[in-house]
Length: 336
Image 1 (cartoon, rainbow, N blue to C red):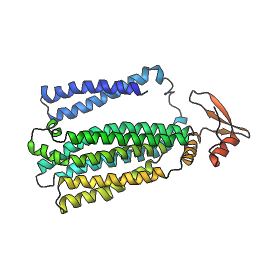
Image 2: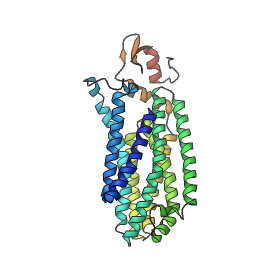
Image 3: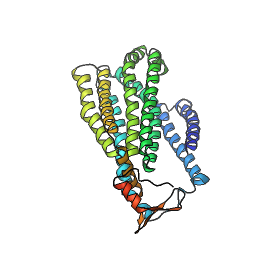
Image 4: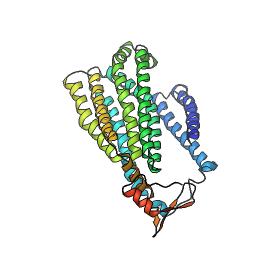
């Protein structure tokens, strides 16, 4: 199901360029036109995906109509989704705080312009990290659900290795282009020089955000959304933001101080999530996933448990073996 999303995004992006150019320049709406173009593009992407889900045969089994049974999982879904949303929102809002605070610095026009470009650059590269994050989240959750804890751990190692390599490559590329990158946004020499001076900090932030993003993907795959939300709240708002204010306004470092504060927040996130991940008992996480997914779908009698397989067929398994695996023996698995 990845290709339809890529195709939808490609079509939307192509149309977005035309729509944005037309609204900004042809109709003279300026920044308002760019905002309207974003809204229109989001709706186009939604409509394309909705049409695909409605008429594609590959999605025919994903919707079976409304039922009372479908409402039973809402509380569990909300527990995960609210925490997961909090993780992302707390991080995004913290970046916006950097831009807002830059307006109170001396020479606010320069600071706001430069830091907005820095944020845009970080966001541009962040999309790569988010792709790796989504991939490892899906892989880890699938492997844990399939009771393959060693494969889940391997997926974590592979994802982190790929992320580190990608961050190093992007960091080297940005440092090579640090003197000219600013010209892609503005012809103001003062802003360009400011961006050149900020580039080492951007590279450090990119490395930490990349690792953090993948670690959060691992957290989502393991169902640690609540832990991730607490870490985001603590690192950004109890540590990062105060350090940013201290460095920028009391030590008069300016925009670099704001950025250093949030680098410290990302560092706290990396250290916290890395410690949790490295000390994870993957066999225990696989058992938790088993209970979380199948807890409401198990019909046990004296001799067997009934499970619903992916293709909708019932599968009978020995309940004693299932109980033995869940209660302490990860090797007591069954072969489908």
